[in-house]
Amino acid sequence: VCRECRNGRKKRINCLSCGGEGKRLHFLGFNPGSRKHLIDWLHGAKGLTIQALSAKTQEPGLPAIALLRLAQVYSPVNMVLQWRHLDKYRSYLEDWIERSEDDGRIHSSFTNAFTVSGRLSSRNPNLQQVSLPWREHFLGDNWLVAGDYSQIETRVAAYVSRDPLLLKIVQADPGTIEGDLHAQTLQRVFGISFERQKEDKSNQMVALRVAAKAYWFLTIFGGGPATLIDGVEKAALENPELGILIPDMKEAAKAQNTLKEVYKGFFLE
Image 1 (spheres, rainbow, N blue to C red):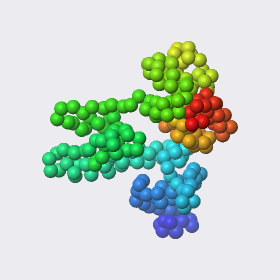
Image 2 (image 1 turned 120 degrees about the vertical axis):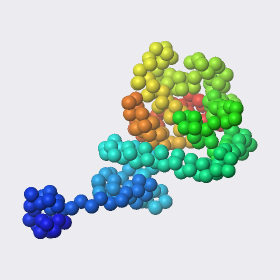
Image 3 (image 1 turned 90 degrees about the vertical axis):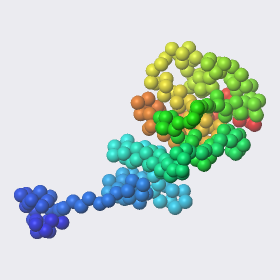
């Protein structure tokens, strides 16, 4: 309270100390990396609805999906999301710079015999976790080559399960509709013809394709309707310009059942 305003009991409009508010504002230090500070700010001071609970402690949690939801009603939360993204890079880049002090180099190990999936992996440090815009900061003597498998999960799913439709898709040219898994999902699950997919380049079609990817991957990895809804919602909140529609529990379950019927051989396996 402002003592110049008699402890706030009788405010003075012309008070130079508080401007007639009857109280002084004291700005406290705030650490966006502190879960307690974030909870006190968002759910305490601002009174925003709790979006997630920790499964272990049953206390408010703040995973990315919870912050994305809160950002829709309180825009400063976007700054916390940006801070998290940048702090992740700051932490490991500082560590890498410290490691490279002797010769100015980073000595990463690449192997395809370390992960269970057999994928190429990078360790000590993991250079593969660097996003594309940041990779220009790392230079090799000759070349650094970026590569990616083409629909590797789908190909493994096809050859292990021998599902006839999946086999047909992965054996077709990936540059065609016949070899495009997500185009097939749009046609068979969402009922959107291949002709419309070819002609329609609108945000709505892009949004449907993003949703189709989420439906496929979240279903083949064993997620139920609730997991699917969270995944589509996260995509929708990260890409608000696309207007991705978030399904309800009934719609998500129906779409997943349709996928399981279309690729019966895989889901039976």
